[in-house]
Length: 79
Image (tube, rainbow, N blue to C red; front, top):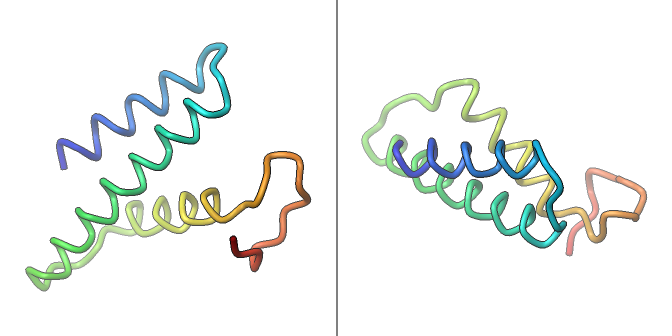
């Protein structure tokens, strides 16, 4: 959970100021990876995944799927 918290704090700090799109995408990818690992560990231990984590996973998975920042958003787009 510490990795998720650290990655979430980094994304939050990058969104609050001027930042390059690449830096933000990298930080969001790291956050998604940390959340995926945490969810997998919860699943391995047969523990429920909190609703907020499940919702954040869905959101960041969709962000990673978007082909380009200027492209029209369609949830079923896949790279």
